[in-house]
Image (tube, helix red, strand yellow):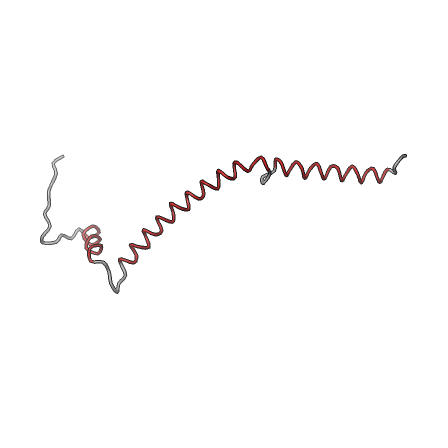
Length: 98
């Protein structure tokens, strides 16, 4: 039994589309072969997020300690001494020879 040419053309196009989708499902950017690479990238991003979260929390704590309504006296003293070079009368300066 012989099928008409346009029916064979439809089947050929359908087969080509199916093969193309299968190829992308296997080797595409989100395909089966790239899952391991994507999983490694995900772990790297999670580690970065964790490090940035720690840094954010430390900065948040420091900002809370500098709240104008109740600043931490130790932190304020440390910053004034560091930024302005101001010394307290009780401070002892020890010079190191090079």
